[in-house]
Structures are given as C-alpha cells and as structure tokens.
Length: 316
Image (tube, rainbow, N blue to C red):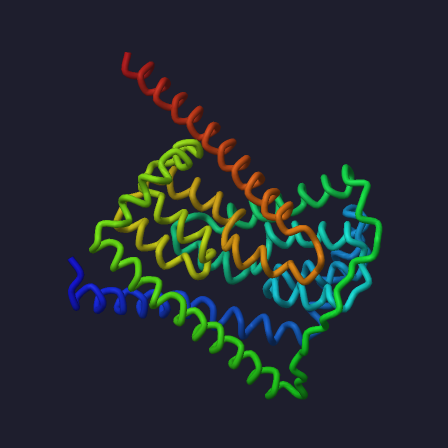
C-alpha cells in the first residue's frame, strides 16, 4: 500500500544516496578538470601513443582514449569529432570506450558496492583491449572516411582561478544531474517495493540471472545497472546489496557484468552521431559482458566445489 511514508522514505534514500555518491564525484571531477589543464595529461598521451598502432589507430587517438577513461564519453566523443578517422577506426574507438570509460568516477562509486577496485579496472580495460585488437585483426572493411559534422563547443578558461571555478562548476552540475535522476529513481523504487512489483520483475529475470550463475535477488540490480548505469544505478545496487543479502558471489558476478555492460540506452545512443552501426556496438558489448560473467561463474563454482571436497576429506 502506498502512503506518505513511501514518498518520504524514497526522498530520504535518494538524498542520502546523492550525498554518498556526491562525496566521490565532486573531488574527482574537480581534480581531473584541473589536471586536464596541466602537462600531466599530455604526458599520459605521449606514454600511450606508441600503443595505438596495435589497434590500427593514429597516434592522436590516444587523446580520445585518455579523455574517455579519465573524464567521460562526452569528452572522448567531442575529441573524435575533431579528427579525420576511418569508419573502422571510429568503431574500434567506440567499442573500446563502451567497455572502458569514466574509470576514476565509476570505479570509485562501484567500490562502494563492496567489490575490489582492481577487479573493475582489470575487467573493463581487458575487454576494451581484447575487443579493439579483435576488430582490428578480423574486420577488413570500414576503410572509408567517417562522416560526422558536429564540433562540440568547449568552454575557454584563462588562469588557474578560472580552471578551478570550471572544475567546481562541472562537479556541482554533475551532482545536480545525479540528484535529478537518483532522487526520483529511489522514490520510484520505494513505490515499486510498497506495491510489491519488484519481486515480480526480479522473477521475470530469473532465467537470465540463472544463466549467469547468480540468484534471482539480483534482478532489481540488473534492471538499475542496465538502464541507468553505474553512477545512477549505484544507489539501487548499494541498497539492494543491503536489503536482499546478496552473497559475495552474487555481488561480484553482478558487478562484473554491469561494469562491462551498463547504461545501454544512453551509452549506445551517444555514438549515433559518429555514423557507426550502434546495434553491432550494443551486441558486442552484451556478448562480451555475458561471456566474461559466465566464465567467472563457472570458475567460481569449480573453486567452491573443490573447497567443499577438501573440507570433506579433512573431516574423514
């Protein structure tokens, strides 16, 4: 039954979640914005520039990958608009960025769920590197020049005070945008809980979660992560982990899938202006996340079985 307490609880949870995530987002966004105007970012680009040839990419493509991983997809796509790239090169960059982007913020937020940060980074960078190499080696098409004509407007800054103010402005805007989505989202989740809808949705995802090797309690977490992403879905994920008593295995397998495949609507649509086939992009992302999660689940089950066998032998 829906009462006033439903809305109050939803607002309280949303505000608390926004505050928790804001404590992570604000300092990282401010720091990275400042670093963007220092020689450090250029040093990072020069460090990784020789590696670009492995993926069939020009040297300046390192800027795209660095901006995408250090900042976000918006910065990376903005940089791509200024470069003359082939369709194949755009697609390689797009699939790599789909798997690996916004690493500082999303890793810091995801660590709040209770999973080691190095696992997130390893999975995302690993999938990005492997997918980029495979497309470069096995796709012979896409040699024509990519067609896109929109150049993003960038805000000019002059002096460290302006840079710091830009960082504060960007960080505050990010938190406001987060609140606009998280608070109504948590209110909606609370409403669905009181209406007993979430268990129904979770049961509908049971065949999918069972195939991945996790319990049906992870259904709500998957819905939030796939739809809203790591940052916006983190509130639901953290809350679900507390309320549904997710096991360590459920938590890790769910996290592994979602770090590889999250915010599938927004992240996929962002690449439409680049002129690539985003359906292939989405398919590769889902397949990659599914494959690595199932493989991890199988290995985890084997380790558990051997551990149980060893304990039984010790008892005999």
